[in-house]
Length: 387
Image (cartoon, rainbow, N blue to C red):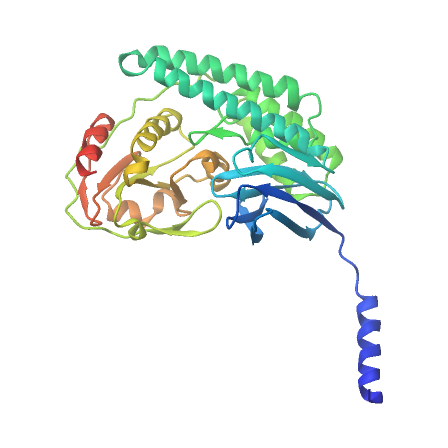
């Protein structure tokens, strides 16, 4: 080797040695029965979900990811294949080992090297049990017994929240699992609603106070601190949340034709309405941070479960002012959920002649807007006819 080459090599080694070493964590293991499926590593940020790495799995399902270790606060991550996700926390330089199958990826798995993730798995198991019981209630009290259903759903929700508080949140409010519980949702509605419920606001405040002491400089702490302060101010006296009737705007039916929409979903991926051509689509315009949202999305969920495997899709646009609320609330939504940051000032509302939410449009397989129904109860029959 020439002297000049030796000199360059020596300088390169010296410079590399002088560079600060970034601490990293690694998560590795196997996901069986998932050959040729893509496994994503996603970071659950304060305001969005970011895909940071991915791998296509071989026969043995082995994988290994490495990322910079968190600084100043824990981070939440998930391993995801399709709609199945395994949630875990990282709070230092760690070697985390995971063993799972594709079918049991959400709750039936083993994880070593991350004690912080145990409570998260318990919360997910409770959440899935709650969703199963909720579905059973919907089937038992369908039809004319809606009032009875609402009462039982409220009781079930209160019981679930109490269980999260007593078993996970209050015993260790500064833990990643406590923080994780605050942002659980169902059918687009947050389990804990601190802006409308005084006790929920106190739960947020308890976690925020603990994180203030443990992680005072982190973005996650400051964000939660601000949420808790605003919630406590808005609920200075206990409020009774009233259930609003879903009021469909009665106006002129939109002419055949499609005004295209392209907006980001909660992973930041752009979703185009026209890309769904070939399916029967319900274009839904709504806001998640409303009293009607929970029951409204519950009704849409029943439609989706009934027709999704026959070529039906929902493209739902949120016009909420609070983007973070929508991001967290939409995590459990199985259909396409996108966000318009212009909120109620959006041109989309003007172009579609909308002056009140929620409102929906039915789009046929050819991509043509064929109807703007007046009543939620009309959707089932109209969608069935197009399918």
